[in-house]
Length: 426
Image (cartoon, rainbow, N blue to C red):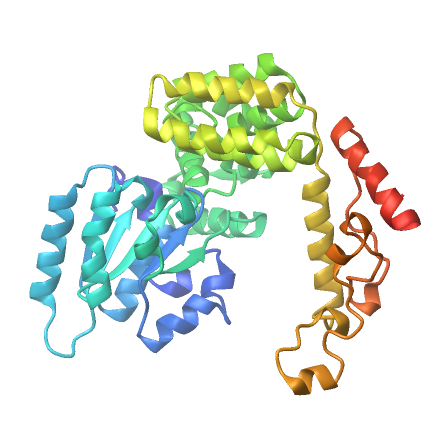
């Protein structure tokens, strides 16, 4: 086998049974596996972080279904390239034959006009589209196209997946077999991989090239850390630890340190980070970490996102800086985040509890006769537009879910809740 081919490419699976990870999609009862077995797959968007197998999965689907396969990269393809691919697909399609598959990598980088050029072909069944994206398609894919696609979410590889990948690489790659790998520890190896198969395999290649002529390549936490600090750009081509930097940025804003927040913002900008990715993180921060302590933060974050799309770089950096500093200086509360987290956990534990009869609408006489809507009190008919009544299902009546944060804004809310509800909100 050609040793000039990257290890990740040499080990790319050729059968669905060799695919590692994403059991919820292609495992025994995976939703996508069941669809593939029918032979009638929909257009789809594969959404997940880098190195989790989006491109590989698209190719395996094509191989299994024996479909013509056309591929474009949104980084270097324009509207003309899209139309040329669609024209080729039309020529391949004969009466009663399955649609060719058009795979578009990094579809989130396509402009609106480029995405518009796909619509007709997808709608008419000229091609079955498979798009791959690391970004939330709700933000990056136009609604008409998104509505014609199923969205499948791919997760970062877990430790078990990475262990399988490591074992498979050492056992089956002819180049790696020329070296004597001794595995003492894998914690640092898996941590630096960050759930990314490509990163893991790149690290193995780095080690292989670093020890040419040696009898042994030892893998332990100390060696992995030292080697990657020496060769940081080798396995992260931007020279930036993408997820580590954004984590430092988020934690600095959360920790109310504007100096550090702007520093990490600058690191991302200098590293070529997508400004929309940063702005989206600020929107999440505004709700998760500032929340009800300062609801205006969410308005500012949304305006920031809209503004940078209009302005672009380099001026967008000023808008991002303003928003970052404002949010770092803002009072903090995660009460909304904790409330929905606890509410979802409660739903998972208690299941589909019936809606209390007095909260149900009664559009028919029969519903009214069996008690729908009975004894419901319309709040606006009472003083201060409020009356005490139960709004939770009977089984969890009185359950505390939302707890106010300790900040001036929510302290006012807390006093009002205590006045209205008494001990229910202490």
